[in-house]
Image (cartoon, rainbow, N blue to C red; front, side, top):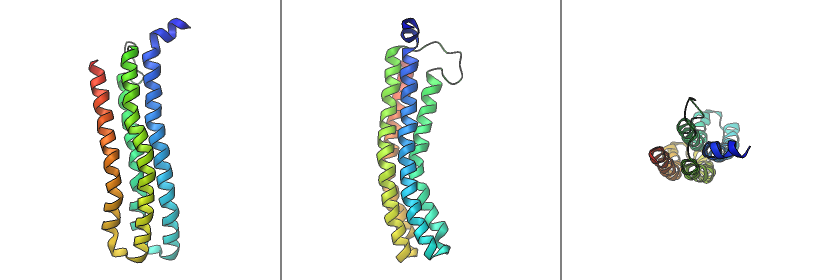
Length: 164
């Protein structure tokens, strides 16, 4: 058993990192979409023609989950879990991939929830001034900026970790 963990520790810890990336970012996206969906349902109950506008705002917090999924796929491709045939990676490389998962996972978790809250405010704006949809979307997208930064740094760490 000790030999198994010694040989495959890098793969195990990096796979745990991939799970964190997709899990944390996915939880944030689910919460953000849920918050926005609740507000959207209230608006659409009163004004059914606002469904399309509300749906756009509801979809925005879902992107962080996609970012986590992308990083998880990159890690799993590089550590040999997906595609198979790869040699076990070193513990050091496994830790690099694990730490690569943290920016996208943690920032995705918090930014998706924050973006959902901002989108809820945008839904309220649509209820009073439907012509201001562009402003509501812009305000929600500003929160997304930090999720994109986290995605980029996570991808950079994965790519640099492959060379290690």
